[in-house]
Length: 204
Image (cartoon, rainbow, N blue to C red):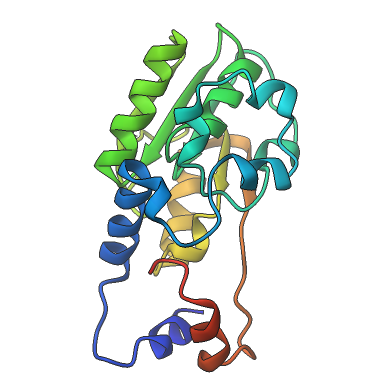
């Protein structure tokens, strides 16, 4: 996958994390400027329950750029600690906070300062006290070993240049028997750079 990603950039070395950070900073601060589908229409198309999402402030969904519904992939129980990897503006974290309840805890991790600020503002507006957000990268998570019962991510690993290191970090912070609920996209090796260039790179 990384070889294919590098082939797509023909004008010399590219700092992929920097490109990802720049794009998501724009999505946080000016989501209407992003040329790709994001926001509430995407959440609705992915099957997020309108009865729940419509009750949230528009700022929670305006910068949503997920690719699936990780919380639909397995159970999340009251009292558990859940880590949301690449938490963005906080939609999945907020929904997870309702599942773990007041006795549980949600920790959102994102590498984009603008997304962290937006997520914190959203949580403050909702008055939720069982969520916190930390800036960091999945390859070096700012968490102790065996912190979480559950880790979720929504369109994160396709953006990670070092996927083995990222997965090793996830399993480091999961408790024994912990679960990873992952929604993502996959670019298969037979897809040509020309096909990708017609669609546009995800982090442009």
